[in-house]
Picture 1 (cartoon, helix red, strand yellow):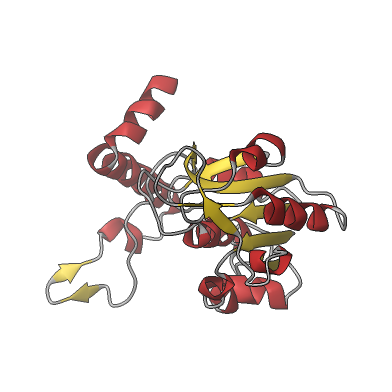
Picture 2 (cartoon, one colour):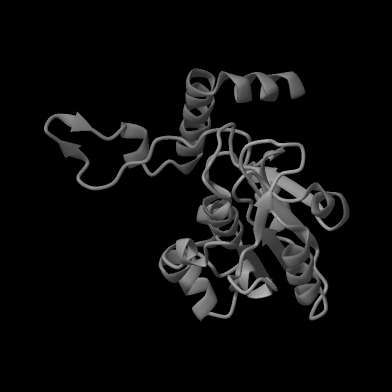
Length: 230
């Protein structure tokens, strides 16, 4: 998989993509992540890529021309399955969407910034708009990092134990059950007996019950949706 990210502040993405799972996946050749500075596509001598908004609204808007040039430059080199714009009014990001994107070959992400981008880009070049939550960030770089991380960790070989990603929270619309490790007892606090029993049928039953209880308590919205589907 290849992910190309267009941003005004590429420096913000240096650390997330040079450590942990994302770095290991790139080292293994499982994924490629390239960050492109939008200012490189500016024709302004000061490399400006923003201007005042028509209509007198407060805040600066990313201009259409440098974005159009950047996107079409990348599209001239390969076909993209999705061209994503990170935006507060995009579709809510979810594990289901991460699973969907992990099956793609080439993805482009355009990071929002300032007051936003010229609407004509959204109307003609963007295939999907994604929001990582009902709040506003300074820019879309952190959202792009979230999307990239959540997608790459699902790729075969990215995680040493591939079954781990399949048991994460939200994969089956449930929160994950509690997890424990050694020692079995610490300051009087004991690991549930069932997890030490070696009875895998009972252990799986316990995990499912815990997932249901935790989801009902902590995310009643997910629990209700699950119950309504049955």
